[in-house]
Image (tube, rainbow, N blue to C red):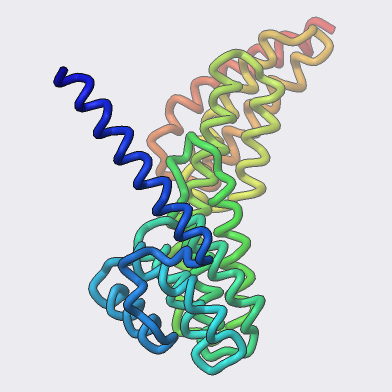
Length: 278
């Protein structure tokens, strides 16, 4: 009996909900109940700003989105759209923040807030960068956005922060490139490793990974030579020696030089043996 009574109550509740939804749809009023007391656009904007100031960013974004069409084309329009984007940024929804800040710069290219919006669009991608071993799409988008920003606003107050973020991005991308190159070396793909290590040093000159990459190239070339056809061995042993000399020239105090030197000496001996046998 209790079970039947419970089912009956559920039917009534769902029926009432359906009627309520139908009545709301019929009247054309899709405004959530908590906003219906806000009768004017000024009241809605004030409420949205109050939510924003209190850190209630989801509620603020909801109201800003509703009130923006009412202010489009007015002086308040750009402020509302900027705050709307900033709600996502402050709520750490960086992909949405980047999208809406970019949208702001397109719609209000001459607004006093455009510079900050362009900066925050790039910074949003930066804030969304994952660890180096994951996909680096946001790192690339942040890099491009920050570089474009510096070109567009060479005297901006945000430039120091932009340059600091760019340094971090380059370091992370260099780390990614090094990890890929070392993976090739580690699995014995010496030709691919050689290309990857050289690209790392070309794309990220002076990175924190240059010293280790040079040492790994010495190792890589030696093993590449060992696993090559006889006609290519002397040349590849010589490459190991050449990379050791580069390491020595660029990092004369490197703790890796001793080990690198031993590999280079063995490479010279192997090279000379091959040349003498011809």
